[in-house]
Amino acid sequence: MSGLGTIDELPPDYRQALSASNVLPLWPSLRAALPYDKPARRARPVAWRYRDLRPALLRAGELTPIEKAERRVLVLSNPGLGPDAMRAAPAIFIGLQLILPGEFAPNHRHSPSAVRFVIEGKGGYTVVQGEKLPMEKGDLILTPSGLWHQHGHEGKEPVIWLDALDLPTINTLEASYCVEGEPQAIRNEPDASQTRFRRAGLLPYQALETAPARYPLLRYPWREVREALHSLSGVTPTGKAVQLAYVNPETGAECMPILGFSALMLRPGETVAPPRRSTSAVLHVVEGEGEAEIDGETLAWSESDTIAVPTHADVRLANRNPRKPTYLFQVDDAPLQKKLGFYEVLN
Ligand code: 1HN
Image (tube, rainbow, N blue to C red; front, side, top):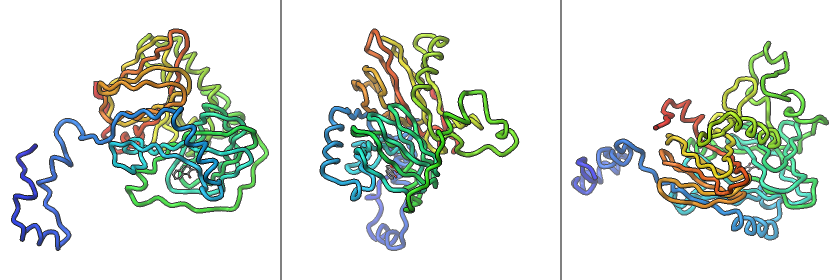
């Protein structure tokens, strides 16, 4: 693999002496740590089919009461990242969470940042710092680092959502921890998407006179995202991605510090080949059916499936339905890569 030698070429007494001093030679591992031209990727393209996950999640509802689980979550584990990896992609934790009618997931806050993307069911809600955020299919709900959050369910059917967290990065930093709290007092007013931030381009005037808030908007209703995708599609040439980024309305920057979120629309029969990027990503199907071709591997998808896309991958996304659009929700680690200065669009 390289001209740098292997650990076995070194005399045993030398290796033992290094090891006894808690020291390693770099050169046998240098090329693995720093490969030429392209990262050595362990994460694989993977599809998790909702028709397989849903029964398993409902069974977890029978097996494990919420009081015991705290959060009833099945974790999407990318097999390339090891047998028990709590990672769908290198920097992305994805879980599917179930909450049953009448259940309450207790108030806590933690150092990792999380978002929820609602898959099915009516009547679920999350409370963040006293703000009650209704959860309808396709809504994006933010629970940023350090903010109190609890979940509840006032409906009749199971509610299932996708959790996306920056947990892998926070864990690598050995900085992940959680604090429990008393149930929050809920403010009796609609969430900010219905009051302060009714439409893009308009801000409460006061926002111009103070420093921008870090997390002014915590809920992005799907109804509005879907409508905006349709409007954007009218001015986007066929084959070009119709894609909207979820941003902080006061700064225009990505809404969370490590993970980025966007919504994509593939028009009936359309294929889109986005440029290769240095980020990894997870795609979740909101509606529609089609195929992803990732580094030559074809993965079929239908509604509520979830797909992992490794870094530097060649990707083609095809909507196989000739009559209906497909909508995808994308999570990536672009905000972190941009902050670290190595984000690249490769072609
Ligand atoms: C968490 O706090 C939630 O609050 C969901 O709903 C998933 C996965 C790992 C660590 C914390 C939640 C989580 C989590």
